[in-house]
Image 1 (cartoon, helix red, strand yellow):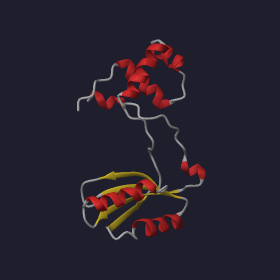
Image 2 (cartoon, rainbow, N blue to C red):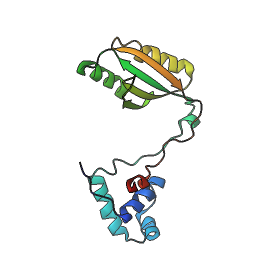
Image 3 (cartoon, rainbow, N blue to C red):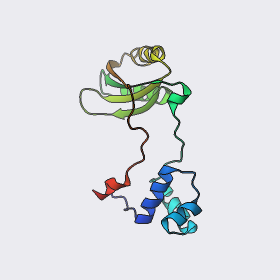
Image 4 (tube, one colour):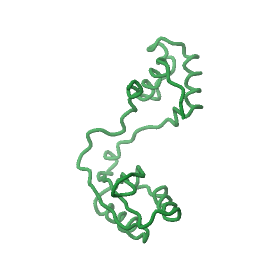
Length: 160
């Protein structure tokens, strides 16, 4: 599907909102040389087109005592609709799973999982994933430190 291209004002608006979505439209308008009413119309259009999906805050889970994170690679026993639906239900219901991506290669899914400590992570792995008969194998990579996380989408990618 060919999405309409973003113009320069929309790009500047998106960049400003990614930095701080609570910033007022009047402030953004004066910074990028547009009127607040024009930006409001553009903002509503970006929301309607699905370019802006939602507004949220970024929480530093480490400062809340959630110190462990890992990537868990998951291989299903069989690729059928029933197994994928059961797995999706677990993913959507689990507070430990931040992300789930369907992948190519040796494993079917990669999960980004967080937990308070390794004991809690082990319990999640054992009770939530490995107890499922349709999951044939998991491989875990513990994240030691994070260099880049929750980065804004680079609008420059659109320029090739």
